[in-house]
Length: 219
Image 1 (tube, one colour):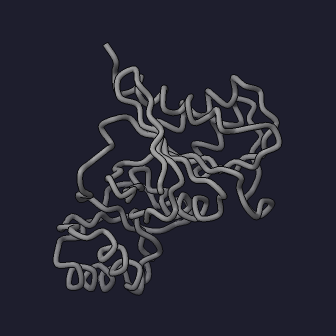
Image 2 (cartoon, helix red, strand yellow):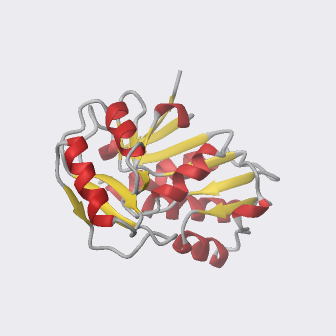
């Protein structure tokens, strides 16, 4: 019987095939990316990688994958990462691991951004929670303004700070039009970044359902 972890592994191994010797690669965060690291290590490629989290970097180094600081890389040939939700228009929700700010910077800096997911992550429409990273300075005021603007609850998440020290909260209200919610979050002072990734960041989604792997390409 195929498990969710089997699907994650199949999607990750399929996406790893786009990586070639000499490439610069942005590495995401999470359980699906852990399979990607195994796939890259098995191919013994000569690549330069930047990780979006300490956990990813430590695992990559343990597997013999060369990692560098982001300040040594201007752009990536490809970035590969998982997602918590993917809708039919290629909107993503990311940030379950609280690294969505770094993940969005890496995705925006890549010539290609490939998203790897199991079938459960494909959704008809985006739903809460939407992760949001806030500055600690003025935290209570920022939360109040988010609630007033978005019309739904915003709750702190009981997790450590982001890799760069931000406080993680979740917007739990209605999403409706993801573009409108993303714009409202981005325009609120005190918000560092949110977990809604716009379709124009995404090149392809690799989704595994059972034993089948499908590549979805944004038009």
